[in-house]
Length: 403
Image 1 (tube, rainbow, N blue to C red):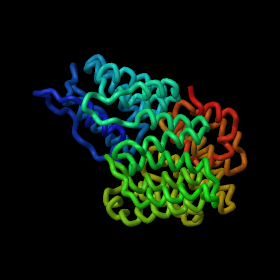
Image 2: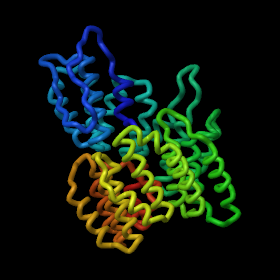
Image 3: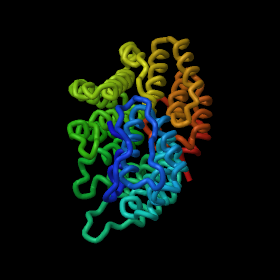
Image 4: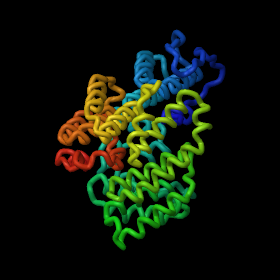
């Protein structure tokens, strides 16, 4: 799966005429170095550089971050607007939410358009909920443009983060009421997550949730680079986090079914595809309670250095613990603790928090999350079903509420 950086490279680099390329493309995974021309770096050379770093990003996020730092040492030779973009990409590679927001604010001023309209999501990632709400509520479509449920989306997410599922549910349902949005997988995910927290399993009140899950799992998620496996698994995460294991099993089972039916195509892409399929399969088997199978699948270390590798280790440790092997889980935790890679610290903290909770120490899990809070997008924690006691820590409750 391509990355956020792909969108930035494709969508924001403007080519100039008469420029010559200065980089030779290299296969992902090989040692790569920036070879930049002396003097002014024109936009074609810059595009080539950014595309190369994008390939590196897929396989080795920390190395990509270092490459952006190297590129920024030449900022005097780069168009100022592009320097801002590179700062944003570098912060993205480091997964540092405050720096990402600071650079994105500058991009919104320079470029306007989609950067302004999508600013509320960036604000949410950095914990600036009040500003995100104000922007979303004030947004109006351009003349002739269709309405978009920015307000309802942001209101629903903020309500969930602040522990108000009833308000989140109202906004999610309003979001689905927009023209053409009834079958939106994103809107259905928000409604499933909120509704799961407001009804008890096995009661008549849970019938609408079961019906919604059936609708969501029968629909094909659509959109640019939308992966049905990820979408269906996300439904399962929300359902399990909300206390509906039977419905979650349906969602995880559907995700695994689709994964296995397309595994051949994904694995044909080489190491990236193989890693993606294997790690996803392992995490789904864990969610389905097939701990021995999950452990076997997750044992092999990834060839890549990215956030998913840290998650793999956390899922492997929890699988081992579910089988009664606490020694293996502690060894994995010690290995994660020794990995101080800056760009991976948010994922490392979440993985270690999951292990801490499984070992019966949710306070340690809360400590880990708070220590890495600048590297964690709080929205990604909403479906973390392995951290229920950690999320009850008053410090985490307050942190999740944002500003």
